[in-house]
Length: 483
Image 1 (tube, rainbow, N blue to C red):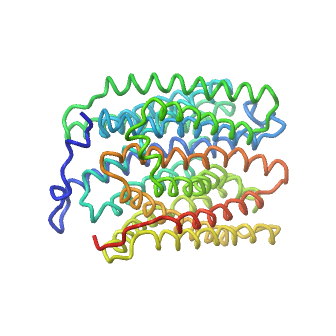
Image 2: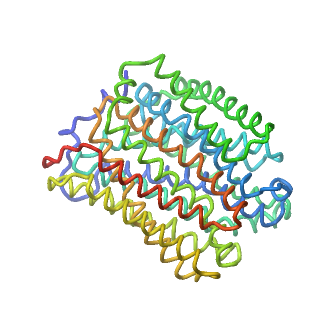
Image 3: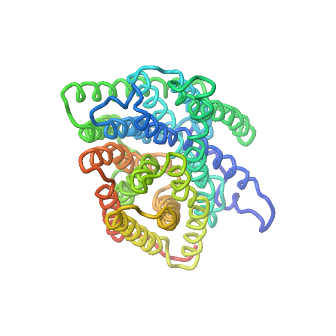
């Protein structure tokens, strides 16, 4: 029986004012899940930058190292994208609590294994597998918060939990130079890059175990065996498909951004098979106009997130000609802004809805402001031969503040426009489509840098896409009656 049928009703989830409530503990645990899963995926960007700077055999000898490095990030998100929709469906069937615990334990094991690989192909396979496991976290996290949080606080809950994203980004970005230095002392210069994966993988595995215990305590036994076997079977097929596309396209001499686009085509072909086999409820979600508009608008959001998350250290280092350590410190201003932005955005959207304004106007306004600020950042890079680290820090922080605030607004709006029984599938479809941006962005941006020798053009594209997404939000139909 789907877990959603066993969850409290909206009235049953109403909590007394003041004091720590059970749903606050849930938010905190899910915040930790976001923290560790995002640290695991973010660490690849700084490590790739280090490998390129140190002319490491894995990447440094490539004729277009930034394009290749970006493709590694894109292939991770190809895996991550492919399990978005199946992850939501499995959560609806086996329970969202179960899938969250499985996702974190999977991510810990795969990240640890990534640090043990030697060859490029083996490393890429482990990054794809990490993405496949982490891909089931998002839709189940959003669904579980919606089920166990008072409706009037759903946006705040989603914002608080996803704050872990920014904390994880910050930890991975700022710790990368120090973990690599430690790796050099322990393993030697050639294998120094392994340490971040080993440390973060072990930490994720430990937290995943704690999450499994907590999820059992709040809802009874987890249906882990069946769900894990089903996810393993799906992931084996998807990983083979992703790697086959990569190897065939790479052998044919296709550019990195072209490989990333082919991976997106693969994703929709495979998801099309799922829709063909399981119409009904899944088909209803795919025909929901508001869900589709939100999903395609979120392509720009994920593009922005993983353009800056993957390449921010390199952007700062190249523009200001600074050291790897200083660039990492400046890049944390982009990552750390979410600690304020996520909960603030969720709370603001809850208040806007309660007052009858709806969440959509705020979402549009924040998206426009963020897009304009990114264009200002691009213009600053273009007009200054050696940009100030302080000015870049301020621009990165303020634009990221608006960017992170708009995300829980979109998540809460999506929750408002679908039925409870369709949440897992809806959030899975939403993030599946949105992840197109995450798949294409790192590879295409790296290719643009190799071609132009500057990140300016990639930053302009990023800002323009955010403004396009604001236009899609305008077309959404939202009921604005008081909550």
